[in-house]
Image 1 (tube, rainbow, N blue to C red):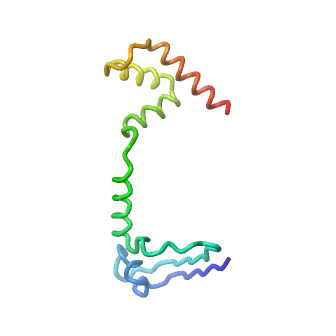
Image 2: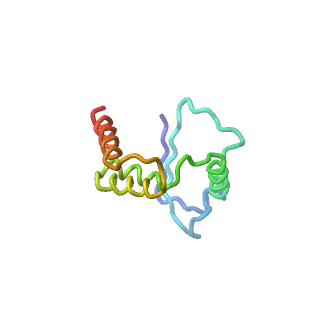
Image 3: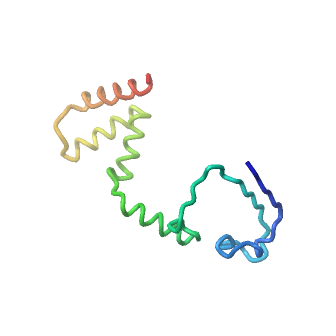
Length: 119
């Protein structure tokens, strides 16, 4: 694999899309690595940071979230901390969810956590 490194290279010599966001007169370090067997991306590849951000926005908009960020955080905490698990279950029940005992839910979550830790 070929690699080119240039230390203290004037950013003003970079193509415009690579200079974007850099202060005038900035010096940069450039590292170019050859990627063997890489396939070209074609015209759909974003060329500037603005195009990349727009591409990411469209991608995120096209993929609906299966759970809210709050629910995802609650799930992770439930697996890490039994106290958080109990609190998450209480919130779940307070929201009017299925009538199962808190103790039963805690037992199920702990069993799942133990199963995952053993894998």
